Length: 419
Ligand code: UD1
Image 1 (tube, rainbow, N blue to C red):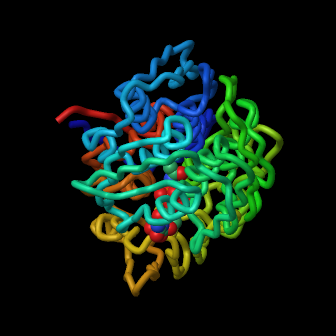
Image 2: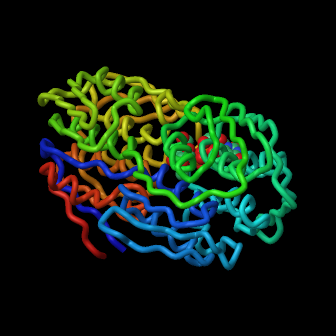
């Protein structure tokens, strides 16, 4: 097991290259099941969730070739086993994204139900109900989802709640369904647009991605394609906060500011100066203490739940009192007790954290609990006086490519050490 050891108090300065988006790469890798040829994917991030996805697809008969550092070719066109095993699925809930493509291409699928999750119950009822609406027969037995169909038939799908992966699962299934599927109350995240762009290159007929109504006209087959994964807006936001929380100046390369507007607006409210152009974003805190900002998570284009914990860390040392309200996941506050151990003044009231900013945090031994909570602990450690150790770093490796290397390039004193 690895842990991170951070000596806090260094002002971060420099340039960091942002990786391809985890939440775009995963659905696109699962979309390879739909294709009759290989998908060549550039800008693929080096993350354990990507490795898990590749292992799951290989276990089902896919083959992949690493073409260069960030580019791979995956051929999932001839799966020999239509089962997503528990041991692979349990570590990554996004595995449910294999269900729609397998059902559409092979007319059957068996996938382990994703297990519990630290940030809430995270059921998959929306995925299953919408697949049933498309004509799938589904039952759950011994922890597995069994799905079969004679032929998926396009229809109107009305999601009672906005869900990112449910939207992705259904639109992937609909690409090979017969006739027109219209998804109402679809999620509008940029990662959905990226998935749809790749599906269109594969020959899918899809309109409306990025709006709440997506239409998919089914086709009889899809081909291989070449695609470049969009930048990771959550990784990008995390490094901007690393600059803001240490009073520094950081320039991000390989980013799209257009998909980060709500986060950039909040960072401006803290007093940060932000400049951007087509491919870069620079945040300059000019050595100032950030001002506290209220945050309320919601669906895109509003403030993302995946940035909530990081803003919580920022508010801990900010000037003033703030309220952070989480409306997407009911239990996404695992970072609160850990930040409190560093001297943060945080009070949880229902789904809102009241944060009274303190001048500085003190280093402590901390336990990473889930991906974004862990990122908030790293940020707090960078700002704190003294040494912070963070155990269970594998949570961070799911979504941050070589986080300690990138932070070191910005001047952070951070090491990964083995227990
Ligand atoms: C995706 C992202 C995750 C992000 C989340 C919200 C990926 C791989 N993961 O997760 O990083 O935090 O969107 O932006 O893209 N729900 C149900 N039933 C369902 C599905 C969801 O009740 O069948 C609920 C969830 O419990 C949650 C809400 O809907 O309260 C939104 O979750 P959802 O958008 O589905 O999150 P994910 O797609 O799992």
